[in-house]
Image (cartoon, rainbow, N blue to C red):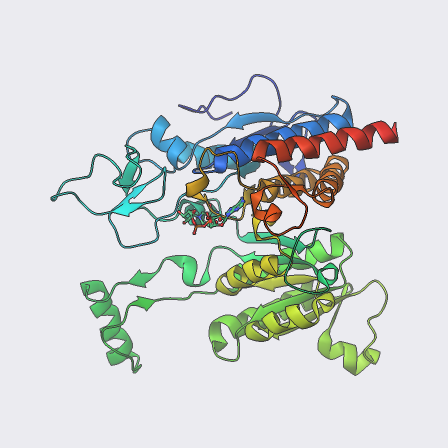
Length: 457
Ligand code: NAD
């Protein structure tokens, strides 16, 4: 086992191993976690309580997660050398222990030089010197601007698929008439596209060099005062993502996989994503799939039993389709930027932006996370909705193969929402609802699991 400087590896519990590409999960797996910044600690406490209770209820002590704290964002600044927001040993621990869960992290947005990890405020130097305190909240936890820790985690751990299941929970207020028709899982490519971080700022020598190359050597024309971003989309990156999406559809008996792209405009990146997707479907899953063209050419428009339909849609059309005919879609595979937009729009459609779960999955490790940000204005108020992180925990339990515990949480969460006992974000949209704190919402879910277990007994 690797030795760590600040991370305390628990004495009890065992490591999850990878055997022939499959997870081997002991009954007492050690699982690394960090609570995150802002409201992260509030939602993490509620989530941990719910996960522990569900496992206890489902397995009567025969299985248990042994939690191991690791550090990123503010917790890393407090525990490691100055200005370290993502310690190497956090990456090493996630790689070694294979499955981890995290709260949200502050990410700098503007062009300022320093960022406060308590309230997310950004500011410049103070008379040419590093500011000692945050001008907004007075905290001393200011650090020089850094690249998104979330993006770094995904890229450095090669967690190439961002997986977001989106479905409606009965009772959740939402803007569409038939939210129950919506039940899709989005596989968004996580490492490439415009998120690759290959950008050149207008006015810099690097930008000038790239501009000269593109205009003089490659014969392209565009304004010289442009910021320039590069959008790499590779065959390897596309095919491993689409392969995972198709395998998921097979394992979960889903009817279709839709490759979403903007190939009509960006032929060699998004268009290639589509072509490479069909290639992987036809070469690696031939006996399990039917393409949309084959459906009409060979099967008279009727999908043969047990087969998965592989189709593709242009990204903008996908937004319309998800609103108008959501029940025709099941699993989506998308490049990075399209997937980012579509996942948030889809979650909003079923009213679940605050309770939408997510995971970042690679071949060696998986990191489950709340999909929203740190909501800094509610820090330490025990107020925000922990649903997103709780449902990400449900995805984690399913990933471990602990389906019984996962099912208990989903039905208890549904029951809690149907009782109209919810956090402020849902309460203000429902009539006759009772507002609960973050911790109380977690306790209500745990109580429902207890009731379900005693009824079953
Ligand atoms: P945010 O998601 O933190 O909050 C926006 C608003 O959404 C909040 O003010 C709140 O009204 C609501 N909200 C968010 N989570 C909620 C919850 N659990 N329950 C109830 N309401 C909730 O987005 P932001 O304010 O743009 O970003 C704040 C910080 O979080 C920034 O530094 C941003 O970069 C970062 N961020 C991190 C992640 C991540 O770690 N995955 C994702 C998005 C944003």
